[in-house]
Length: 188
Image (tube, rainbow, N blue to C red):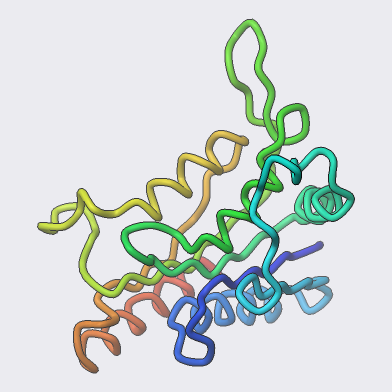
């Protein structure tokens, strides 16, 4: 089984999403020691953003990223919420895997996802409180976007969410503890 591990936080060792994504990978590796893991730090090794001269279908690097995604059984993504949405580094990677005819298609019945059968687990960190029922829920565009994007290609992602990580040391500790309990549940 192949696992692709991506991190997109720019905060390095202080990143909660990186801590959580590593915890997820560790739990999955413990359950399957033969797991083949590939890692990419999208902040340290960024993918160029799309431009008129850089279309995904025409780039060998883009093809390699798509092939790596397609060959993976499990994808673990560390995704912090910056300014109400995901980091642009993660968006650049998504632009390489959302390819008509490869991961989705259009036909007489409409759009169809072609990448089903993969497990995607997203470690999401948010500085404040943005979950459903909070006063700022309408500002949350990371989890909702990632649900839509992966759903479009036929995958229902799973989320481990730590929110309130910038609301003092106690808020951060509580958020990490809650997310760690969710990791245990997902790995079971």
